[in-house]
Amino acid sequence: MSDAAQSENPADRRRVPRIPTTLRGKVFPGAVDCIVSDLSDLGACLTFESEPVENDRLLLVIWSTGIAFDAEVRWRQGRRVGVQCISRCDFRSRTPAVFHEARAIWRRSRPKVRQAYRALRSPLVGASS
Image (cartoon, rainbow, N blue to C red):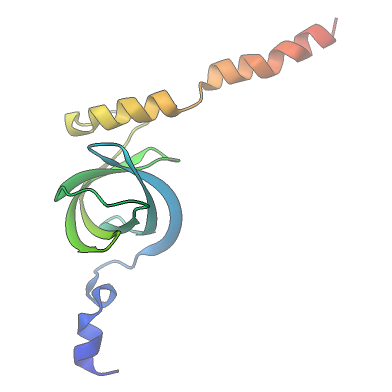
């Protein structure tokens, strides 16, 4: 492969290698579902089932972890979108105002651990008597 062909590959220009994933994500505004195809602290590739969001600036939330990224769209190719991460936060701790709406939706979707724990304990308490 020639040097010119290698330099056209976006992966060759990345400062940090991305890790392939199949994580479920949501993009805000709109809480649009996506799959995070690859991810690093500096960027990600998102694959959408339907038409991707049109915004050039978006919030990406990794739904299983609550890690969120303020990101800028760098390229589009059909239903795939490449983003560069500007900042990040963890929804399990304090978050900047730009993330508050997305965090509220994420928190409402999470199972209530205390309630689930009580539900698991209740049948055991009655069985020991």
